[in-house]
Structures are given as structure tokens and as C-alpha cells.
Image 1 (cartoon, rainbow, N blue to C red):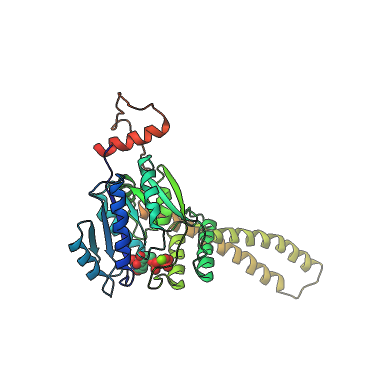
Image 2 (cartoon, protein in one colour):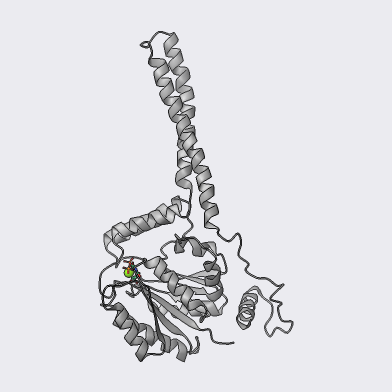
Length: 343
Ligand code: UDP
Ligand code: MG
């Protein structure tokens, strides 16, 4: 079997403090993986400079002159972690069989990239790195981050728990990802949507090697809001539901208010006043919800997401008759991957 070309994509924003060490460690790992014959010699490190204001790009550029395996992409301005990551994935995809994305601060254990690649060899197309525990994060970071996953779940966004953007994707998966043309691309929600054969590898999260987090609370909240609003119309549903509830409550109260009026327990004018407040309030909320539903539809249409993604298509990928190995499900996936690669 051909050894796959691996590209490790690293988005970097003002990471001059940590970058030299990151490069050293990743280069070392890449050499090991090549020596172990797990990946091809063509494998690369791709650093994406997300409009840094420090020496980040200079470091990347110099390293690329020294090492053939180091490449860089410089974005013209700061577009945020998610977009920088996408830029890296799409730049890498044409020259790679699989792509690993990892943060520049090496908080994520790089040694499990070996397991990522092994899983890829077994025919998995997406491998998620999932943190076991967060005892190295600050108390605050840990709780805000956990709240983030819970909120996403409650809002109906399917994300992998405790998985940030540390993952391996096959070239095919990245190509499908490219078909999601929405501008507000929330990767952690989209990648599970891709489907494909995927699995999880666990690791311990470490502390940042150097420098400070580029994700302060403000950015985290913006990120969560972005995730929710680009994936779910649950908030709109809430409005409709509240509208319906208050409308029905108003009907019940209405009868009670009329009862009060005829038993003479009210001031003149109070019944009509209170009833119009309740009824109109409920009706208005329903109307908002209804309009919201249509806006939700428009919003889904404008995304132009692919309606389906083909996993295996035997029409265009006929399996060879002379299998060397028995036809099990495991082998089928490895086989399909091999055929896809040779195409
Ligand atoms: N990053 C980026 N652009 C930004 C902010 C961050 O490319 O606008 C990169 C950053 O260099 C790092 C990764 O995204 O490689 C994750 O950032 P950080 O480690 O600060 O986030 P945290 O781990 O604290 O959530
Ligand atoms: Mg970090």
C-alpha cells in the first residue's frame, strides 16, 4: 500500500513565543512517522499565519527555507482561528491524502497523531482528538468550555464533546467540506455532518507551551453564538412555543376574567383591558415565531449546503475482483480508500 501523504495544518496568530518549539517538535514527529513508514516522505507541515502582528510569519518563512517539509501560507489579515484553519485545509488538500489540524500552542498531545494515522490506515476518514480531562486548564476556562458544549447540545447542534479542532481528515472529507459554501462556517458542527467513517482518539490536554490564549471569554461567547446561530433555529422555535403557551393561558384566564366580571368582582373596563393584553401578547409572539420560521427557512436555503454526501459509489469505483484479503466490512473501507487514492 502506498504510504499516505500527511499534512499537518497549524493556524498561528501572534505565536512567535511558541512557534520555534512547536516547529521543532512537529518536525521531529514527522521524521519519526516517516521512519516508521506510516506516512510518505512528501508529508509536510503547513503553518497558516492568520495576519499576525509579531514575528510569526518571519519565523515560518525562515523555517521553510531551512526545511523542505515546512511550508507556510500567509493570510492578508486576521480572520480568526476557524477561517485560518479552513485556509490551511483547502490549501493542503490537493497535495495530501490526509490532513491533521492542530493548534500552534501544542496544548494537544502531538504524539497521538501517530494513532490518527493508524486509524486512517484502517480506513477511517475522520479521526477526532478528544480531551480526557481538563485539569491543566484554569478553573474558569474549564467551566466556560464545558458550558459551551452543553449549550450547543441544548440548541441542537451536533458537536463531539470535548473535541476542539484537533482532528485528522481524509482528502475526500476535506473536499466534501469545501462544498459547504456558507461564510459562517462552524467547523465543529459541520465536520460531524459530513458523516463518513469516523472515530475518536483520547488524549490529555496540556498547558500552553508559551504565550497566552487567543480565545478570551469575549471571543468564546462570540464563537458559541456563531455556532448556535449558524446551525439551529431552536431560538426561533422558543418564541413560537412561548407564543402558543401564552395564547392558551390567555384563553383560560380569559374565561376566568369573564367569570369575575359577571360575578361583579372587577372594576369597570378591567376585563377588556387585561384580556386584550394577554390575547394580543400571545398572538404577537405567535406571529413573530411564524415569521421566524420563514426566516429560518430562508436562512437554510441561503446556505446552499450539499443535500447529501456519497460515501461509497460502486458505479464509479468498481471493487476489484481479485481481492487479496477476505471481504469484510473493515477491508471494504480500506479497499475503497485505496481505489479512491489510485484514481
Ligand atoms: N488563532 C488564529 N487566529 C485567531 C486566534 C487564534 O489562528 O484569531 C490560532 C492560535 O494561534 C492557535 C489556535 O488558533 O494556534 C488556538 O488558539 P488558542 O490556543 O489561543 O485558543 P485556546 O486553546 O485558548 O482555546
Ligand atoms: Mg490553546
